[in-house]
Length: 284
Ligand code: HSE
Image 1 (spheres, rainbow, N blue to C red):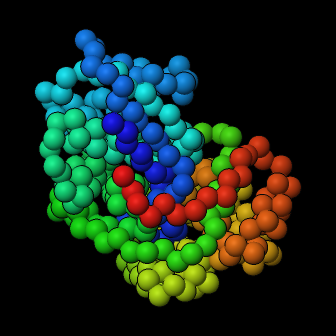
Image 2: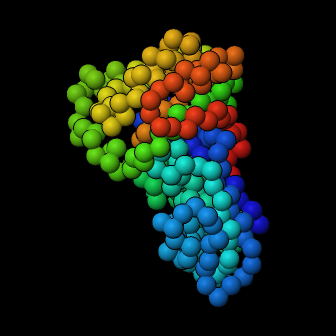
């Protein structure tokens, strides 16, 4: 049995803790055989446990405590702690593992609910499960989400070498935002979503760069964001924004501008990988 979970990018600028897209990097899980104890074969580094303490197994056993141990194989090209949903992919993988091994027949809505309760916000786990573009709210303990087709474009990921933990990136956010500012922030997000639904990427990209919820506070942790945004304007890409909690920056680009955009990004002094991705439309 094989499970494939896409990477994700949360927020898309103003859709903080609510909007996300699924991307064409993947965590792959394969069930190899029955065993006495849980074992995960992987080459993702010595920091990642290869026994029952791994988040994947912990998650699966929370969902289906009576699962019998297996040997699993895990591979992933989702970079860790870079704002591309690596830990969400493991949580979603654990839920799907429990679902299949335990024959739970969980609906997509149930998977999104369980994953959001574990993660605390739906904007990575929902697109990882459903694919494509998902808008979700997690209010009064219940998730409501809508999946929609994201307009065709290239997604350029500028992935700095340095890690940034979500907890650190959330610790710089304010406790309160003045009412007037919150109203503006919400109107920006509303227009961004409406523009995506209309296939209007120039307007969506403009709104993605006007976030008032988080980017201004996080800028000190991601000083490269403004520089990349200037390059994106110069080249004529749709927009550049922090991917999730950062430090990765995503640039949405018309296909014909992608080579030029990548070329400009390569000139930046920061040590980073530059990957051209597409939207994953399937999810798990
Ligand atoms: N919405 C979350 C954040 C995504 O920006 O903190 C990262 O997990």
